[in-house]
Image (cartoon, rainbow, N blue to C red; front, side):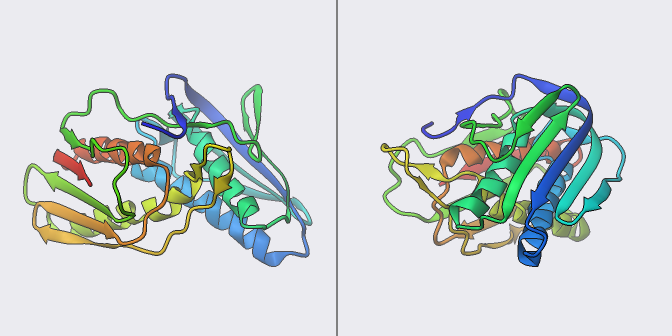
Length: 241
């Protein structure tokens, strides 16, 4: 699959801290960073970075002064490449000329990562998911529409279905971390124009986007999400076209 190098062979367990310095006068930038970090944390909880999980349910937010923000949490079995997704979400702001982010870094015990530096890595999909995965064989799809169907082994109760749809909706924010890199290494920011998603029948989710322009390596996140769901709501098939 073209695009980002996908690797999740290294996992991390322990305390993680994310630190950001932003122009304190730019309230919109501060709110944007908090939004992107919240998207990352919700994606972690949903299972997009399977098998990584948050240890406990709390995140400690700290304000170290004007424009200085820090978030602390503990994780288990988190692929280190998941941090590259957060990096991609922040870099998307820069690609769109939001320059108020001065520094952003992740601290994983003795390792410090610059979140404003593109590594070219993103999480891999689970090697052998316990359900059928059907991906397009043609590298050039010929259009920019996207259809995702997730079929479950059994009927999904309505309350559980609503939760699954809410978790799947996070993918629209995560697409932003997967810009397409041209042959000349120019990066085109991802445009997320919204999607429609619903249960076609009590066993099948239908997610459709008319305009989709992210790197297809992002589909690995959907495979991982379905693996996380499979533990409590068995998945039979993930189909993408």
